[in-house]
Image 1: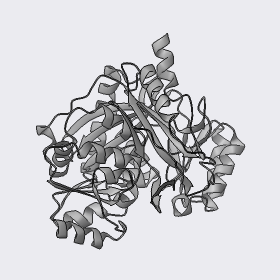
Image 2: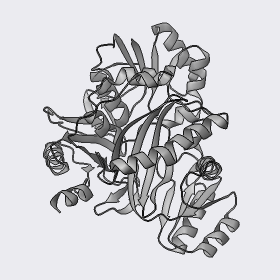
Image 3: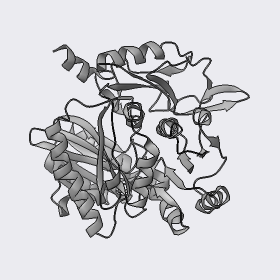
Length: 423
């Protein structure tokens, strides 16, 4: 098979690393890719926002499957354009991608199909939103409706914090994404990430993970796109996985089809495990970043047939096998992230990763032959172990060999699971 991977981050490097191991792969291209992805695929300098150029490349290379990594091209309709041109695509249509593209759309689907989630209201002006916040009190959650690269969500512990978040949205802190806000009840519990492949009719559960969203140790400070993750998530017991499938995933699949938006791709359910059971915080319509990195480390099966079956509606004919060993990834970010940070800082050395370990590139580039950090989240240092504690020890030992003056990380990724193991 000839495959094109769209994207340039840590998630895409993990997908590229896993896809490249497939004996079915004959030619592998990535657009635009990054220096890590270049180890596995031929990079193509292509503006992925130019959908006609992507279609032209697929025709030129006779591509059999296009794998779309990030959410923005999906929301913008790249999968629709490619499917219309006759190509198999892993990733939902723009109408189905509204599950991530609009927080309000997802909440409305939940309400219509009785999917457990926090109570909510949608607002398109600040005074009404603020009046609702004052009426509800804190803690409360304020979300920019649209895509905000993981930064449009404020879990406000005070009313004043929530009011300020509303101002941020309507005053343009998140661009067009903040033109409407969703205000929802705060859910108390433990967060988990759950992943399923879906071809519109069939669903294949993958694995669980837990992400660390906040920038500071002990889960303090502002939300980020994710500072680390591990898989599996102990809070997702067999019973909780079964309930999540029955109460959240399956009704969503049916509801999307009934609403005229059949979903094909990966459901990434952000969950809160509350006293009542699993409740949906949000949906993403692509693999998590950095959750994808730990999922790919644990996946024993060939990824390529799984994604191809998702794209062509034969998901009931494949299965996914996983290693029991946990995997853990630590994000090395540029100092200042998630605020402003220096770009193009030099990464002098990356260590050789042994068996069961890998350094994924998330925000890097080559400038004059030197590796530099170009993003906020730059490297994903990943390892497996017999326990989460062992995976954590191995990941940090590898990370400490990275020579990059402008990098920082949290030192407590996986702390909940490690504490459970000690108990």
